[in-house]
Amino acid sequence: MKIFPLTLLPNDANIDFMRLRWISIAVAAIIMFVAIGAMATRGFNYALDFTGGNLIEAHLDKAMPLDAVRDKLAADGYDSAQVQTYGSGNQLLIRLQPREGESGDVATKHAADAVLKAVADAGNKADIVRNEFVGPQVGKELALKGLYALLFVVVGFLIYIAFRFEWKFAVAAIITTLHDVIVVAGWFAVSGHEFDLTVLAGILSVMGYSINDTIVVFDRVRENFRSMRADPETVLNKSINQTLSRTVITSFVAFLTVVALYIYGGGSLRGMAESQMLGIIIGTLSSIFVACPLLTLGMLKVTKQDLMPKAKDEAALARRP
Image 1 (cartoon, rainbow, N blue to C red):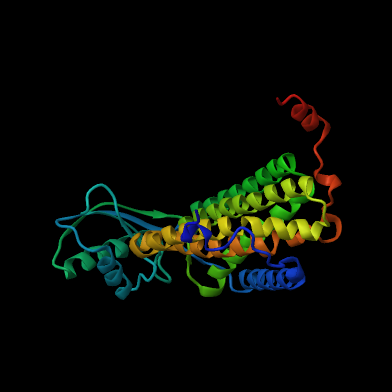
Image 2 (cartoon, rainbow, N blue to C red; image 1 turned 90 degrees about the vertical axis):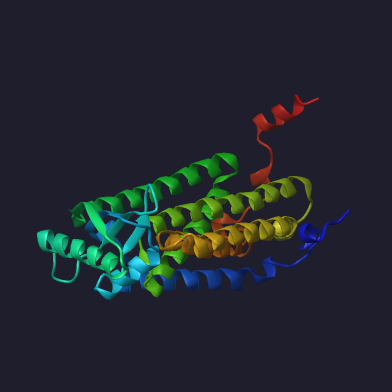
């Protein structure tokens, strides 16, 4: 019995993706190089997490909308204020980048005054529990740790896929994943949207999603190489078509979840949700149009001999009942 949503794309689809491989790889390369160029020339609009600034804890007499606090602070010259609640709804954690030309004690005092004014304008009252200046050195350390986390994930993926499949698959998967990460990061450079730790977390999650989608396709490629008598392009085409329905439906459901987070998660989670939404779209397209086409090029061209069961696999299969 066929259920419509689950058969939106039939399992016996026969789209010739390999015929478009040169176009798809060229388009992906152009987008990636544009993203690299944007990051090199425009840079990122780093948030307080990376640049340093004031960290303020305030207790309000009564809760008030976070967007109202952000708007009041923006009107007072703090455009990229990060405002979130902790504990009860009337306890606020506020991060402010100092105004131009301010630092140290001056920036700390003006930040506290701005928070008190923003709350007072709404007919509320606040007690400043903590107000401290976070230096840019802390931001540099966070950026460096984020880079280490990125490298750790890439190396981990490379080792896992090389053991799980074959080195050609590992290289293709890493190229595809790095493409996705660069495009998502490049979007923040092009758009000028704030880049903070939540965006970095979203980009790392994009890596996980992208590699998972690619591995599903590669697993079907390996199975088909061992069972089909056909040239590599035909096998790769068949594998993509067989997993196409699963890929699209899974991505669509994940995208809906992140859209809900973007709409209802508030300003503090918007950057992460934005990076994940873009990452899901790019990751889905790259697993279809980039990952497998890479396996038909140059040194990465995969053959049936690359995927035949090794001796230990044959021994394990022989012991099966």
